[in-house]
Amino acid sequence: MLTVAEKPKTARAGKKIPESLIYEIMDGEPLYYKGYKEVLSGKKTLEEIMGSSSLQFVLVHYLLGLMYKNLDEKLYYFATNEAGIHVEHNVNMSNDVAVYRKSVLTADKISKKYADVPCRLAIEIDIKADISNPKDYNYVQRKTQKLLDFGVEKVIWIFTGTQKVTVAAANENWQTMDWDKEIALIDGLVCNIGKYLAEEGIQTEKED
Picture 1 (tube, rainbow, N blue to C red):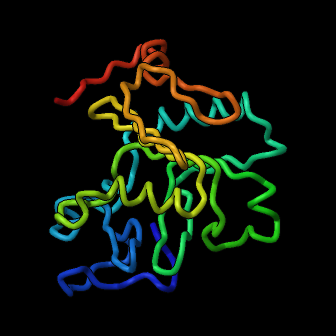
Picture 2 (cartoon, rainbow, N blue to C red):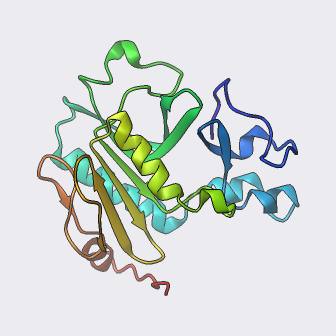
């Protein structure tokens, strides 16, 4: 949930919507949590649409576990819980998992505000924003490119429905592959989501 002063307080149609329903800010425009309309109509609670599924938090657990075991904590901070990132004026986003160099996110830059320096790696698990508006259909590409332009070295999207992974790195062609392939993270570390889930006995249905 965004809590920055510059956050708009109205929806695109001009009707006021609680700030708690805003997920991210893109070019000064609010993007709301997927399911926010159900909250407004009383069909769901805010907690229901903001929480992660069990599959999503297991994947975060897997990725963070790999990082803590294999990457140097003296060099990196491992962020999660929709870690906020302030990219530029009126552009505030969040990451499910992010890896920051301590040499970039230095002690003097750590505060109660969003991080305003690029992480080295950003990982997103599914789309949590409402993109029902046609202008937001390219949300994944738009967010990814903004992160890369800001200086993030690699952005990885994990889609649990299609069981696909998209990897975007600066100055490289974006790649999309099945999640049972080895995916390079950073510093030689790789993950294999399909293999991990199989080892855990977790079965998931693949959407068409």
